Amino acid sequence: MPYLAWSDDLDTRIPELDAQHRVMVQHINQLQAAAASGEPEPLLQAMDGLIECLREHFIFEEKVLKMIDFSGFEEHRQTHDAILEKLREYRTRMETASVAEAEELIDTLGPWVVDHIRHDDLDFGPTVREWLRDAAPPDDPFKQLVGDT
Ligand SMILES: [Fe+2]
Ligand SMILES: [Fe+2]
Image (cartoon, rainbow, N blue to C red; front, side, top):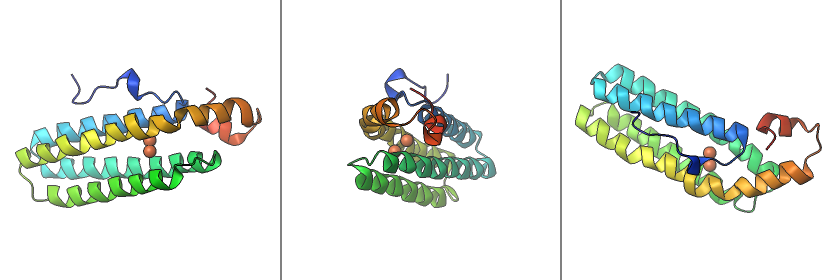
């Protein structure tokens, strides 16, 4: 049983974003497994992997939001920045954390990431899908990148 399981209520129904979100959840599961092993080096590597995955995902998602001229863009971008800042702070704390402390940090950061998908990313799903359906030309390269819905 993974630490965090994917559930259908996390689907934005935008293929590329959903694929990236699933990888994010896998990273959190790897992070939890690394913490449970009690080895500091894999834990910090897993944390670096999660941070890098989120950083790249946020860049991609912000491009999508800009493309559709999403009204909540600025607020959404600020939330991304705040999540990354918190994760970097947690990464520093993990350098000296016990197994129990590291697991506690993960129990806090896991829900941030999942709640961001569930509550914030799902907000723009309909607008992006509408754009892909009605506004994007069939050969639009971005449409191909995001995935046809
Ligand atoms: Fe996202
Ligand atoms: Fe987001």
